[in-house]
Length: 114
Length: 110
Image 1 (spheres, helix red, strand yellow):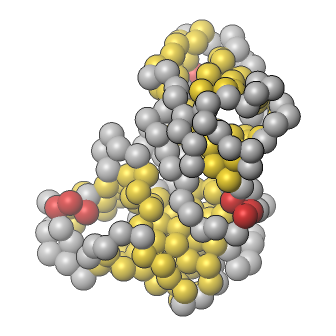
Image 2 (cartoon, each protein chain N blue to C red):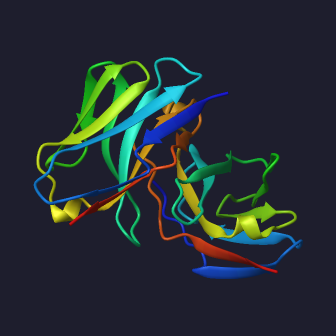
């Protein structure tokens, strides 16, 4: 799996957009970018994933650069409940048939401030 | 919709005692199921995964074991707990594109 680099921590004002960057310069052509978050004392929560195109769902948007070497997770209107550690993971699709684990790095601690 | 349950939510056990953690999934059939452990301040460590009833693969040698007696039930066990078994235990199931995690069981071994 490609290695990812994320800032250790970020702050965001409540109601503003939170933009979380992730560098993955060694990503391979068949690897996806996945984002999860983990609120304190809870299990990780899937947010979004993408291959090449930008993606949007009810939780967030994922912007992937054209060279696919970096991406940004956008929470359009952050709330206090979005305070969590956010993990960017790059790996082949889980539909590939492999039962390999998801490898979580250290992630970014996002703190949403009132 | 699919739901994943784990119990108990928290557990405090003495060293040397047995362990049984249960995970059940609703709303899907024949899921791929996973047991992970997260030590304090650490990442997730895959312990076991199962692609079907009675089919268990172990990722890390240890004093833990897993069983899958039913399609949507995954059990993590130990005959004798060690202090190092303390941690946050997470069950997960896999869809075509990602994994979804349960709420977790926080185990403290004293």
